[in-house]
Image (cartoon, rainbow, N blue to C red; front, side):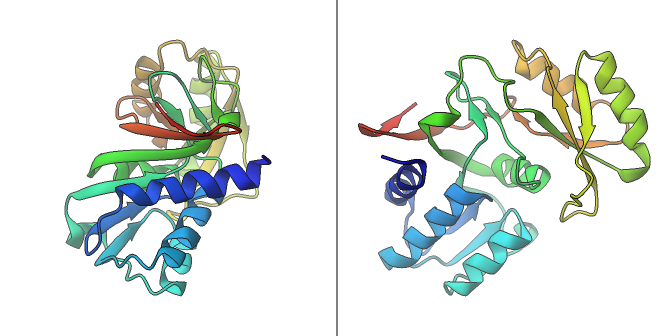
Length: 217
């Protein structure tokens, strides 16, 4: 089974957690796009959705789902999103698509976070994928120096401006054996909006597609 087929399979598996006539959070990325396509094909009706990016908003509205502002929606029962990496403790690296801040906010506001991935995203220890850090533009150089002091090698994602109008540093070679501590340390740097570690609030369930079907972590 190729990667695209695995993404479609795990996206369809996530539909089991979607209750009709509710408001859910929806993340960003290629696997989430498969989830939105599967949602449209399923005929399930949502009251509304809270979106983590402008791209997801457009895709949801295209299938007839009303997109609600989180300020009006309040707490959500379910958030469905993908990840760039996940470890055995359901901790994640996210932000390859640049939507990490809104993704982290929607995840925090949700009672259950179901992460949908294919088996290529499974790691023993996080960190093979460079860690995205969203920064206020004027703080880019300062934050980069602080990240280097933490042992990382930050690289400015020059072509990327987030939906919030900020910039992203992708940090290579960080020691993420203790991702909770690293998440806190990075988020404490002045000028950082947030980092792509989802360790303080990990996924509640990871659905993983592989050649043998979809498994649960």
